[in-house]
Length: 404
Image 1: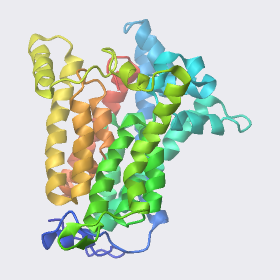
Image 2 (image 1 turned 180 degrees about the vertical axis):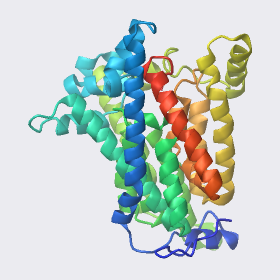
Image 3 (image 1 turned 30 degrees about the vertical axis):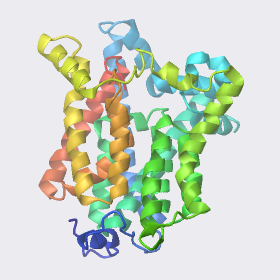
């Protein structure tokens, strides 16, 4: 089990003490008062470092594409910069709505475009800048909330600090710098967990509702909500008595957020499931597939030297599975079930492009990584390799080689 550090300012590791008593799923978090400024200070340095790294990667990509050797597609992608790939869709929606962006844009959920459009109402703020600001502020808040979660669960401020660095420097984390919705989902997801672990059901419902309308993956938050509510529900004569009011709202909130958007799509366009049917097209996520078959196919491409970018996903599949095992063994059950559900959605796609980005949304995996990197030497090595991977993957994405 995790051991709480005795450093000044740490709090009792209530969750893990309960685990030692044999009831991991019902573990209660620390009741220490929140420390928002501590969490923000902890997240600030890795946040800035990651943006310097991605900025350098963008400069390298533009220099490489300027030679003309990489083709016009790479030059165009490098020119788009932080508004490339899916960020371009979010910008188009924020600028002209779904009708202006076109039918394929329905696969992108509305919270981030709405936030960007609202910020763009300020004088001198364009839609593109507003989108990048929304994404980055959300990422900073999300990183701070993850740090606070780690501190409250373990009492180990060093582990919380490692978690923020790993989250910022993970190779797919360059999307947290771009105009993507991952940072916003991270913020709402971590806030939901904080509320759930502290039994603030109303707050959990509010954040869960927003998460469900931010990305389709947000709906998965219903699973940890159900686990937390059930673990705290009163029992009578050996039977679970389902609570009412706030706890039920906390469980249903994320599906309700997703359902509200789908209902609007159905009313406006006549097909409520259009966002999912568009996403299942081959050039996007693709249809649901057997992950073993998909992995074997990508492995065969590696051996034959074709589509090597697909083979890049295989090491990440192994790493994600290992980190999920760590989370399942060392963290409360709701964390493991949430991460496992997100990974299940990611690996059942016939097209694994973007798998790493999906895995990044399973933020408990980062907590698992922080758990097994307590050695200073291991931490330095992992962060060095991660930072190199962050720059490398960002360069490949800005050069139109890697699909984020």
